[in-house]
Each structure stands twice: as C-alpha cells, then as structure tokens.
Length: 79
Image (cartoon, rainbow, N blue to C red; front, side, top):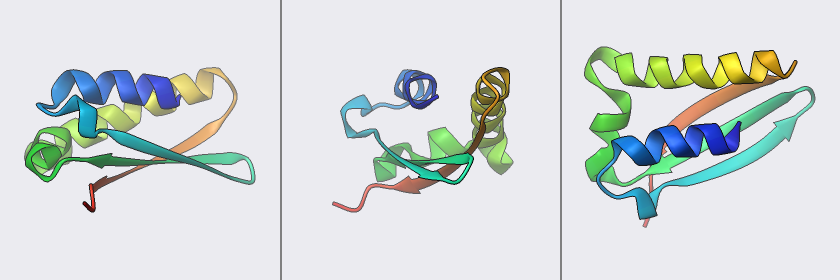
C-alpha cells in the first residue's frame, strides 16, 4: 500500500524527491503519513479535497483487496 501511495503521489507533484511516507501499524490498521513539499501540497489535496479523496479511495481499495485497513494522512514537509 505504501508503494501504491508513493507511485500515485510522485506522478502528481513537481518535487517527487521530497515525498516521504511514514508507515505505522496500529492494531489491524496501517496509518500512512504522507509528507510533501509545501509547494506541492495544493496539487495533492486538490480543489475542495477531491484529489486527496481520490488518493485515499484508491489506496483503501488496494488495502481492502488484501484484507487490510489503511488511513492516509497528508501533511507538508517540516524542513
């Protein structure tokens, strides 16, 4: 799931080298914390959060097909 999220996000942003995904497992749920460059935050979120919602939907679909739960959090890099 982490690789799916990484592939989607790096194809959208201008600074793919600044994309970092932290993975944390909490019980039966995997939490993916996505960090992108401040200038790319708008591209990942989209108008009214549509891109972020679509990204979450795709990642959750992959997780569900593997019988897992996933949460995707989006934040900017803290350099």
